[in-house]
Length: 269
Image (cartoon, rainbow, N blue to C red; front, side):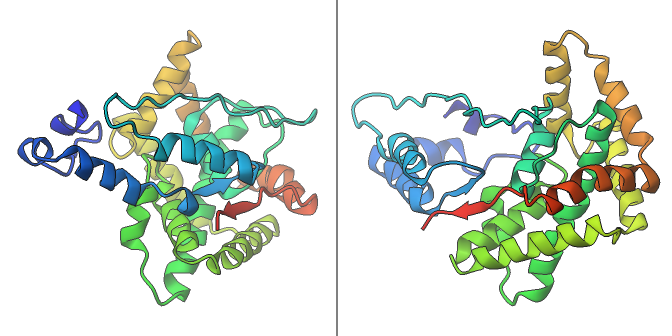
């Protein structure tokens, strides 16, 4: 609760004053969590079993003891590797490609920077199609799915749209597959690529729009004992061009579409 009384890492105030928070009763707090965290409304991405997921959701979101402090255990992500794949370090990279539904095989360090740019472009194309073609605005609901990443708002729109009605799930899958096919066939906007690279570089170098992503990336390199890696990553991103991004698309995205190795996004009923 103490984080509510402090400044948010993104330099934005948390909603709710200290006076308001302290006036809440235990039942009001419990009711808030019961209303906001509904297991049936959770979105699961990847090869995760329905029953196992529901058990975890019920355990961590429904069991709030009244007379003792609720604890939440952090489980390690279950291994789901193939002999031809490996995990690449980098939080925002994992986040983007998990939500995109793309399984990337054996990327090099330079390709990781390129894939981040491609992921951001795809995310925008996904959300643009939802926002421009559908009559309902999902801006407010998207806030619940947001996280500090330069592509998170676009994924938030898509997640909000999918969660609004279970019938939308098929539409989300259709949009994702169509956009993957387009970009794998060379339908890529060079101006959008250039704009994404400029924004990413500006954020990394001047610590502006991606302050939380920079902190995570710095921590990742620090734990590896090589904090200077952040500059190498920014250098790799600066070297991204339409030509080498096209090569990355042909190597990874096109192969995934051809092999039907896109991760299915599952909306719990």
